[in-house]
Each structure stands twice: as C-alpha cells, then as structure tokens.
Image 1: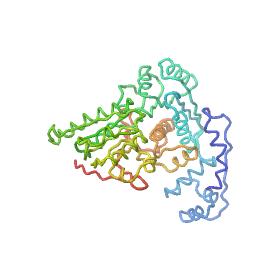
Image 2: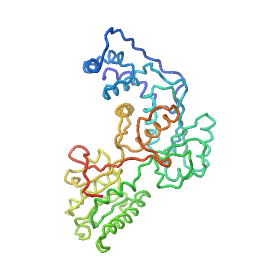
Image 3: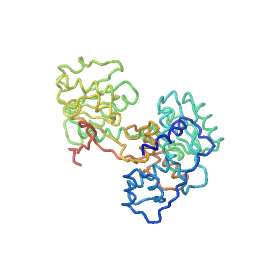
Image 4: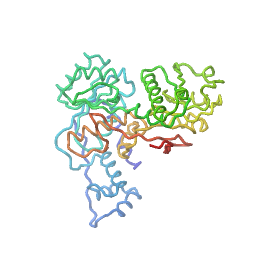
Length: 409
C-alpha cells in the first residue's frame, strides 16, 4: 500500500481546488491473467504479500469479507480503476462563509471531496465563497448556484446564517452540517440539518450528575445557552426523582477567554466539594479547569462534557488523575474505514471532528438521493434532521472507552 502513495500526490494537491477540472483523470485497467478462481483465502494471501494488483484483478465485484472489500474500495479510489459507474454527472455545490467558519472552509470541502472520490463516479464539486452571512450575500450565492445547474448544496453556516437561509426559503436542496434543527425554527422541505444535538447529549449526561452541579462555560453564545439549558434540565431531573429543592444546588462559573487561574472560584469553596462538574468549554480551557479541580482537592464526583471535548488532545494535555472520573458524550458512532482513510490522505479528520463527520453524512445522503444508491451511513432522518445515536465514553489512559451508565430507566 505504501508503494502507491506517490500516485496520490497530484490528487492531494488537486483537492485544494474548489472547482473540479473538466479534464477527466485517466482510467486504470487491470487485466486478470490468472486461469484459476481466487476465493477469500487466496485474496487474503495477495493482500498479505502486498500483491495488490493481483488482488484487484480478482476482486471485480463487492466482496463478502468486509475487510477485504474495504481494501478493494480504497484502492479503486486511489488508482481510479474503471468500474461500472453511472453515466450521468453528479453536481454538488458548497456554500462557504469563510470568514465565519475559518478552517472549516477547507475541511468541509475536503470531506465532500474525500467522499466523492471513493464512489468512482463522475462529479463536479464547486465552492461559492461569501464573506458574510447577510441575506444579500446568501441569496446572491444561491441564485448563482441555481444558474450554474446545481440542485444540491452543502452549507456549513452559523446559527445566524441558517436563520437567514430559512428566510430566503431556497428551492434547492441545502444541507447544513453545523446546525441542529432543534435549535432553529424551520419548516422548509428543502433544508436538511446535520448538527449534533448538544441538548440531547446534556440530558443523558445530567442523569449521571449529583448535587451540587457545577457548570463552567465560556462566554460564547453556545456555551451560555447550553449552560442555561442544563440548569433547567437538572432541576427537572431532580424533581422527577423527588429530590427536594434545597438539594438541587447549582453553581455556575462564566470563564473569560484569558483567565487561566481559578483560585478565587475554587479554593476553599465548600459549595462545590464532591460536586458534578459540567464543562461547556473548549478543549484547552477544559484541560486547565480539570487540572485545577484536582489541585484544589474538590473530590469531584464526576466531570461531564458534551461533544465539545471528544478530542484525542484531551488524552495528551491532561493527567490521567485529572480525567479519570470524566464522562464524555459522543455522537460520532458510525464509521467507514474507506472514508476515514480517504480523508486522512487529504489531512482531514472524520473520526473526532464532528463537523467534518456530519458533512460526510450529508454528502452521503445527497449522493443517495441523486443516484438511488444505498447510503454508506444508515442514520435515521426525522423531520429533515439527522438522528445520531449518543454513547457515553471515558477518557482512559490512551483512548476513549465505553462508559456503562449507572442510571436505570
């Protein structure tokens, strides 16, 4: 496999272009000269001995062995092998408010590109950059997209941008990977949502919480809104369990971006000892808070966090003793090894980065709509919103492991 990486250099450079060239990439053909049939064991021997072309020559169709079929699909994409493809072209536009979404202007484009190259299907992927999410900018871009013949759009917008798009009410299919429909008022049949449901994750995590509930959040809109929701939800859960109101103790800390010392908030604070600490803060800030929870001997019952802190960086930047009682909610539960590898070759992450992951989910759904082919991700769609499973994990010594909830329905 490593011997083939030199073939990918033009492809990786090519992926940074926002408009796929009309010049087709040359097709590769492999002729099978072996007179004998080659079944699963024989195919595995070719793989084990790095005889990848012999393997591919005998693997023209989908294989019953899932691992072998993933290797087949990956190499078909890398080598651009000639297979049975659909004749009609596939066109997807990407609407990019690049000043609002920063690096995701590149990574969401790469996520879409990485998915499409694995399908071995003629496609055009074109980006439309807008500086801001004003009604004028978005409407102008949507009209240009329609004029260029695109009927499917991936739009990584902010909450404000999604609200503006709803007001425009476009008549092309738009998928927003960054917003959950629960957080917005929309009835359009054309707009689909792929955002993670932070509130649903919070509800599950709060079942593991005990009083006092100590909530940390930064001063972002999402951090503040989520913390307010968690306070209300915690009181409701406690009331449902007939826990008296005097025991529903909630302490909230709003942490400015530049603050790194929490001595004033934490030292000798009897109100938060043995509490459940809920972190609605980015990964670096969360690591700082966790280390100081240990430093000031607060004996946390547990530390809770949503998708915000499902990040391998957590494992390297915190001490195990600081995170041993942490529980993280995660909705990136469906994985496809071929797509993971194709993204990795472009420097992209769909294992931990939820926006790249949800972008892939949306492109997969649109591909299925356009081609009638089976989806790679069997994720339910309800009222135009992707319905993700939620699992609870613990950050162990070197990886995230399953957490078995103590809560009984």
